[in-house]
Amino acid sequence: MAPRPDRRPGGRTARIRAQVVDAVRAELAENGYQGLTMEGVAARAGVHRTTVYRRWRDVGGLLVDVIDAAGEIDWQPPDTGSLRGDLTALNQEILESLVVHPSFAVALMAASFHSEQAAQAQTQLWADRYAQCEILVERAIGRGEIPAQHTDAWSLLMVATAPLYHQVVLLRADPDPRLPERAAAAAVLAAVAGAFSGHREESV
Amino acid sequence: MAPRPDRRPGGRTARIRAQVVDAVRAELAENGYQGLTMEGVAARAGVHRTTVYRRWRDVGGLLVDVIDAAGEIDWQPPDTGSLRGDLTALNQEILESLVVHPSFAVALMAASFHSEQAAQAQTQLWADRYAQCEILVERAIGRGEIPAQHTDAWSLLMVATAPLYHQVVLLRADPDPRLPERAAAAAVLAAVAGAFSGHREESV
Image (cartoon, rainbow over all chains, first blue to last red; front, top):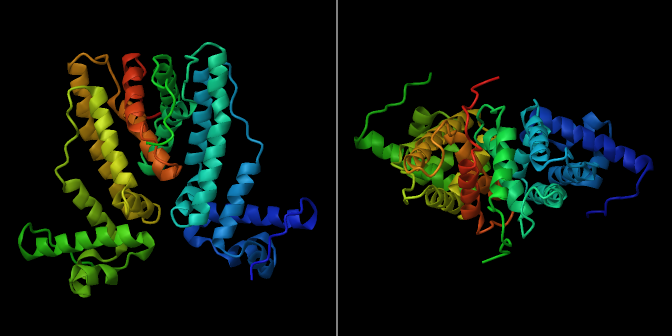
């Protein structure tokens, strides 16, 4: 009933996937999750709808693949020479992705409230991205900017970046242009003062 | 076509509103925004559907009223005697509202991605709640815990509380039981170090 998707890299299979992923991104950004249909994606991608149904099955399958594709992009965290500079640059990047109209990032977050498959794929993508960003904290420790002993990179990155998402995505407030720099500075000052020292408890 | 809603306090009108608001909360928490219908709310509330249509018009109208009702609750921010204690208690409250199953708070956030009316009402509710929380910062300044000169209460509150929402609502990570205290401590240490001094620019 559900044939295994053909994962061969390159060639016609890869080309069709690229066309479909691009179409999903465009449809999501323009019409949101509510307007995302297998037929709309097939038409926009110029791919036969039976192909789209066979390989992606349903809208959840399309969302998972577009999130997987985002994870395959060779993204690198900023490297400005200081933790404050790195976190500010990261926050600027985040803010731009959220305030652009239409925002693919915000459309994906909205979709994740309605598709458990999409939510799981997005949680994995976030986890990978934050894991990549831990290098910012390691480099800062190497430069002696923040305490070496058990600085919890994950909590530090949460404090630095969460205010951007909260303000724009959930609060829908006008973006404060100083927030990227201010949240970055707050995270660094808190780290210097030892706010993130001590191992993170895995569970209680 | 759209009769003005009857806003008389007390009596039958108020009773029907309370029944409908309770029903919307229950339906939202159980079935989410996608499952919210005028008929379902009317049935659950035990109110005639024509009454529900006449007074709330559509699902957007129901959402706005349930958010307004949340704003009418006499909520007070914590008062523990220290900024760190207050912010930790606030974060614990936030975390509980997000991880409870089913979570009315999370259901409302999801709904706000699909109803512009609900989004506006929720943005207003957030703004009111954060404005109420500014007293925590004022009291801390009064006690000499943080610098008096232009500490930007709003940015401080963002840094303190946003990590909770980000982790649970958007990242859907397992809640870190230390995060409420840790994010609160980070915000206080950053404030002491002057991270939130200087007026917030209103616009650029």
